[in-house]
Length: 110
Image 1 (cartoon, one colour):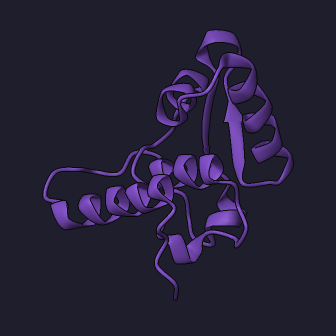
Image 2 (cartoon, helix red, strand yellow):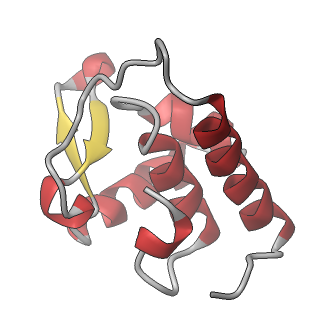
């Protein structure tokens, strides 16, 4: 997933989380909090809105709750455990470069 794959007008926190999910099989609320430097309440609210928008799906309950990209949103079969062995490190740099652009507010224009 790249910035071009994301729906236009997403809040920066949402876009950052979705880009991180493009390279991680799943994340939890604590990951969301750390990634976006937000409170428990804000993370819980944002994750509920992401679910309501159909962008992520929740699995598990309680402390075991995880979130992953929704299959219809991604437009391709979901890969829950991407292999990092032999994967091009440039693809990781690209995603993290995009996240940096989001934080700095310098998104490249298509």
